[in-house]
Image: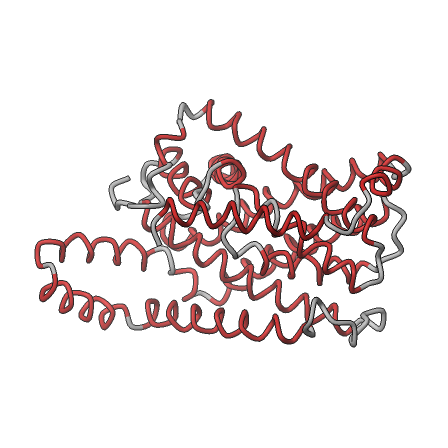
Length: 340
C-alpha cells in the first residue's frame, strides 16, 4: 500500500472511530464528570504514564547489550523520547525508525539495522507480556467474563493476535538459530531477481540478525522480560489512577485488560498519536466493566491527552539538543539503509 493511500486510510479510520466513540455521548455529561474529577490523581496518572518510557529505554539497553555492551542510558532515553514524539506527530508510525536512527546519531558505533532489529524484538516482548497480563485480568473474580466487547467475546480478539505473535516469534527464531540458511535463501533469491542488490540485502540481513542476539541469552531474556512486565504494570497503574480520578470503582485488573485492547486496536492505520483507535477501544474496554458512556469518554480523552503532551515535549526538546530535524529520519520508514 502506497504511503499516501495508507495515510488517507488512517485519517479516515481515525475520524470514523472518533465519531463512533462520541456519537451517543453527551458532551455536557462528559464535562460535568471531568469538572468533578481529582486533579492530584490526574497528575499522578500523567507521571506514571510518562514513566513507562524510561523503563522502555532501560529495557532497550539490555536488548542491545550482546552487540554493543551496556550503552549509556542517557542516549537510549533521549532516542526513546524522540521516537515516541515522532510517533505522536508524524504519519506512518515513523517513530520506530526515528528511535533507531536517533540512537545511531547518539552512539555512532550502533548500526541502524541492529538498532531497528532490537526495536522489533522490543515489540515482540510487548505483545507477549500484554497478552499474558490480559489473561491475568480475566482470572480476576471481578472480570465480567460473559460481557461482550462489541459483538464478540474477548477470545475472538485475542486469537488472531496470538497467532500473529506466534508467526513473528517463529520468524525471529529462524533468524537467530539458522542465520546461514536465511542468508543462503536470500542470496539465491537476489542472485536470480536482482544480482546487483545482493550485497546490500545481505548487509541488511546481517545487521538485522546482530540485533537479535539477545534471544540467545536466557539471562538477558529474563532481564528484558522483567523490564517489560514492570513497564506494562506501570502503564496499567496509570490507567487505574485515571479511573480513580473520575471516581470509577473499576478494579486494577481492568487496566491490564484495557491496555491490551488498546495495544491491539492501535495496530490499525490511524493518525499520528493513535487518536481514534485509542478512544474507541478504551471506551469499549470500560464498557465491559459497566462504566457509563460519559465516564468512559472522559477517561479516554483525559488519559490520552495527559500521556501525549509530556513525552511529546520531551522528545521535541531532545530532538533540538541532538541537532536533528524531522527530515533526517522521516524517510527512514520508507527506505532504511545500513549506513544511516
